Image (cartoon, rainbow, N blue to C red; front, side, top):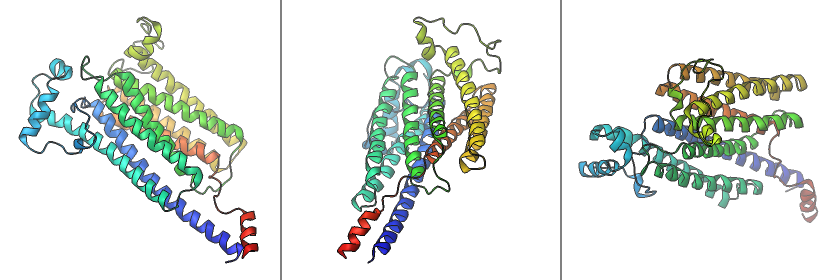
Length: 368
């Protein structure tokens, strides 16, 4: 085989392998999207404490008969949430919240298998480029950490509280989003791009936009953890003012940012007021510096998505956060985060080709 033929064959193999890797990673992203939404529904329906034990293997099997259902229900009746909030709940009512939490844990296990098994296959069959191995192992490790954090979160509501800690809930949500970001970034880096990398300023600003969206999602996790979205349901005024009183009534002052529902909701609003103009500025700047490019079009679309998410957030607030609207708000946040990440990765261009370099072909040719 000549050097040219070897080079062409290598590139064809790389293109095919990258295609299959992208298909796999996009399937993982779909499962992660579903997992976060089911997790949101689990929180919003107050179902997260219905399973009071951490059984990574045995927990896959739900109760199969009346005795097993009664055993699970009896365990739930020992925790403060039942004793102080849900006393008198029937077994049928318990089953509703149990299935939400069970589905969330099952999806989490499913994501782990869908990620780990194909990763092993691609690795042992030599389909992974060397620069991808550490990235993908890092995502897998972060998934393992996320499982432990999930139980750490649930454990916070089993003894002295009637719900989980908002600190731990927001941490759990943010780690899930970090896994989503990392997976999206790798998948997008493997995709062919119609244009080359963008300017340094565009790349840097688009990266900071991803960080801003992540911070806003963390703040949303605090809102969910404190049920802060069910209060102060007016806009643009909050409690009758643009800047409401009573924001820093707790001591020490910093605690208000995490434990005062009014302050937490107000800061989440400020986050939205920050992300929206940042995305507008980015769209204008990229369109002026790189008019007509795919980078500019993506920046404009990102602004549109952020604007739509802001509108959904306002509607959710005014409607006092009904389940459907709250989940739509969470889903839209993931769409914004995923698109912002894909946009940032695209401004950097595709991963460099791992095919044999020209000097390698020259060496092969001379030997042949």
